[in-house]
Image (cartoon, rainbow, N blue to C red; front, side, top):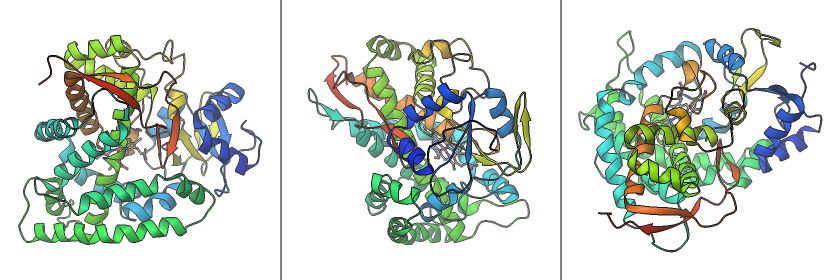
Length: 422
Ligand code: HEM
């Protein structure tokens, strides 16, 4: 491992740079060390190798037996539970993935579209016209509403909603991130206590469906789902999977939307085209936004086997992650990589494994199609009602929030109503 280039500062300093200015840290490493380098974060004891070449990423995600890197369980288990799809490995992971994927494909997606339009319309009715405000919280309200309705159906879930919102807000605080990085568990445990109250509500939903209540919602599908041997998931496990969907499905999509609006607000010609270009162009806007502002920066594995590709050799046991920001801004794969240009996605797909906002391989995001649909629908609802401009000419900086890269000031905009709006 020592043969790999990488920053030589102390782990504390590397961690501080990553937490405070993640993009500068990544770009700096690329400039100095190239497409494969090794960093050392405080509290981990072993290095993390960051890669951004598509051929290396293909090799990494192509091997389904690789394990999870050690940091993930520590950060996520208190929130989503140990049986979460995000934390399982091997056969256990594959069998759950098979049970949980159907609600996110095909026909079902159509029923979500109406829910998404409705949630967006209700939130947008409250937008202030003519004065600056941050859109990120508004996007969070929409995506929380959408995922709750998809998971639990149409019934009111007024107790659960504020609890989930506060839990999420708690996990994204800077104080918590720093304490976790430095090995303190206390704040995480406090969040775990908050999660207990949510537990009770989720277990009650599950119990209701066991008694035959519910309908076509995702919670009912999970209660009814069966493995190949005819057994199903027990209540505790379904609770973990529900938490996983509620948490993974809401903050990420809200952040993706906030970034899309930030980019559109600063590119009026693109915004105009997004209004009139129909679904293909909106798709391209979403793809390009997720490329230029990837929400999830790292999605790593611990190698169970050596990985060797064209001059790169990483032995079994190494922790390796794509540096998604760097993979998305390689000039070899994206000419003029820092330009916001949805057109580049109209003429065809990017090189494979050069676009990975949703990760890849057997752990690729199961909500990717859901998230992309939601982003298109919400953007469409926003653009049909409002003209959106950035509140300041200063670019929105990237801040690390929990496991995401998020707009530091929440994407502050000023909107005006369009004449044709309804
Ligand atoms: C823009 C929005 C989203 C982004 C950027 C995103 C990103 C990701 C990424 C990068 C992974 C892979 C992690 C890994 O490689 O280990 C992932 C996994 C996952 N995502 Fe998403 N996600 C989004 C929306 C959603 C939504 C809407 C849902 C559900 C409703 C969801 C549920 C999941 C689940 C359950 C996994 C775990 C998959 C597995 O381990 O097999 N995500 N997501």
